[in-house]
Image 1 (cartoon, chains in turn cyan, yellow, purple, orange):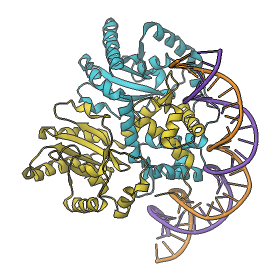
Image 2 (tube, chains in turn blue, yellow, purple, brown):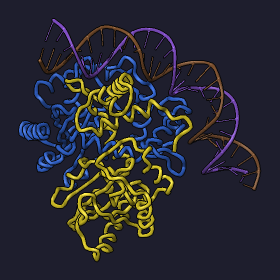
Image 3 (cartoon, helix red, strand yellow):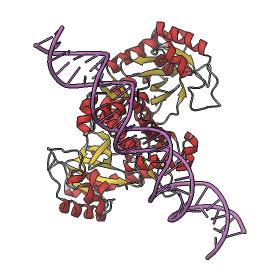
Image 4 (cartoon, protein in one colour):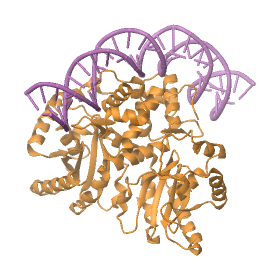
Amino acid sequence: MKPAQPNQSLIDGLACLQALAAHAQPVGSRELGRMLGLEPTRVNRLLKTLAFVGLAQQNEQRKYLPGPAIHVLAAQSMRGSGLIRRALGPLESLFDLDLQVAMGVLWDDQVCYLYHHSPGESAGAGLGREPLYPAASSGLGQVLLAEWPEEQVRELFTDEHRRRIDPSQKPVSLNELLKQLAQVREQGYALTQTRESSKVRTLGVALKGDNAAIGVAGRFADRDVARIHERVAETARQISTQR
Amino acid sequence: MKPAQPNQSLIDGLACLQALAAHAQPVGSRELGRMLGLEPTRVNRLLKTLAFVGLAQQNEQRKYLPGPAIHVLAAQSMRGSGLIRRALGPLESLFDLDLQVAMGVLWDDQVCYLYHHSPGESAGAGLGREPLYPAASSGLGQVLLAEWPEEQVRELFTDEHRRRIDPSQKPVSLNELLKQLAQVREQGYALTQTRESSKVRTLGVALKGDNAAIGVAGRFADRDVARIHERVAETARQISTQR
DNA sequence: GTGCGTAGTGCTAATTTAGCAACATGAAAC
DNA sequence: GTTTCATGTTGCTAAATTAGCACTACGCAC
């Protein structure tokens, strides 16, 4: 929903910040400008401003990376929403399913995993390490998309909306996706095959009021779907009702 | 370090975002303007822009709160720096000391705890729940300040630098603080009494290269200081050298 | 229904920002 | 050591964006 008078400096500054956060290595100001299609002087000015408030910093090679204030922002957002704090305990109760356990939010047409735990790992190891994943191929992504009006989903998957071209990502069949989302709305959960293996499936359930979803992934038989769904849905209820 | 041409729109937009993240309740746009001393139309425009990119959202009462993209930013910053991921395992090794275990970064003249664990809690419960704490009263805060040039510390604690007036916070004796910081630099660790009780002390050690610090807090005798310091310093080395 | 405080917008003057041209820096090649 | 190249950064001013006034729409209490 575009406002009447968006502040373009803020939008572009935030795009620089998000690109920094998403980039695995320190990045130069000119390189970042090339990545985002922005003029170099401008990017340098925005990065210098981000550094001034602590959200970016430079290393000895003068390249930029996230600064300490981004952790502050992360910590405060976690504290303010309470989402991760509320979710960690209940998510642990799913570990006995011997499946991957995850929680994520939508970011563009992808899922960002706030938490992603595999069997045999410690509970705390699930934080902050998964790359973005195509929403249409994810059970978590689909239950989040299913909460959107159809028009908004269409807009998200048009070619001109996409700012990042990912060649490794298969084109999405929009009609197929809309059919799947309609089914998700009926069932109250999404069941998808992962991109990597048709035998590995994800079952996702939305967290009401949080714009987030939780789910499990792995190999399970069709006859187990109802039981697993009930467990995941109960966990979602616990997370949503805790305050 | 103020740049040649800071972008004031970006600075003020980020201030709105940070205030949203720090505020425990949804907040109206005019109220936020009063909090930050900014003109209401301007704040509304900045908030609408933040909402446009997903970093803010409105509830049914039209008040603003952080949006899903802030979690994405948090997750990506954790993934990018790897700080929390690297730190969680080593920090758990300090649990046997039966003290509080914490990790934090500096934010203004306060410490923001990225992690804060008390004895008897699960490892994952330490995330995203502590309020900001005066840096001068914190072992973690002091080792972080000790890495700063004296001039910069002076500037941080002048009255005009402070944007937030916290009446409950005792005035800092700058000369006393500078003396303590000189001692911290010699010793390689900080030892402070907490604001709440003179019997509860914090011992803090800096994480090289991360602009962060870890420490323990609780009641311990003087004769235990060297041993505890060695344990904390060893943990700090593990965290800093992991990649 | 009225009154009050709120959120939000159109329009245009005011202010900020963008980009050109230049300088400073650092690394690699010779 | 010097030269070259790509980088990061800055001053200045024209161009673009933004801020604030005045207004409308909304929600709640009485």
